Image (tube, rainbow, N blue to C red):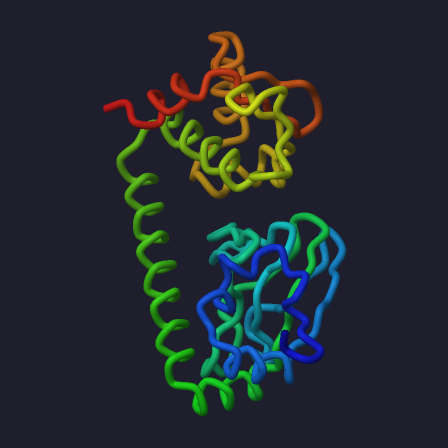
Length: 236
């Protein structure tokens, strides 16, 4: 056990960058890391400001937002537990980072984190690898937006949300329907998927009527027939 190990009770340690580190590397991160809780709707970093922090998301969901030429906000990405946020070696923040839900972060001062990376080249390579993986995922999402229908996009999105819900999702049995709360409003889902709110609502209603999902109320979603939902997501 590492003295003063802030990672000791971390629920995402095995999935986050820290899960691939040795004791020496973890000790270096422990020396500069700090837990931070943020409220729903709180902005963690503003686009254009100096990049001063980075770290791992422990709980909750964050969104990356860009401002369009006409002044509208466009959600360009979502971050989930175990995802890394911030950009080492970047002078300014590219996208505004805001909490969609209550969240807990493991925060590192950017300058101190850069020094740790310079002293631990293996950690630097691991972070680079995760960055490339995130880039490939982003490219995959762009392909989905370009080629799939509205129903296919939304079905895939719900499957991803159900997978991300993990242990927080409620199910009556191991293989039974899973119910979870969406972290986004229908308007935000529309922004992420490149659709209108009306289209999102219409597609959800169709899925409910066909018995694929349930809409218990509020933002709650029940995946009643996962196989049927997966078939919709993969439809040609």
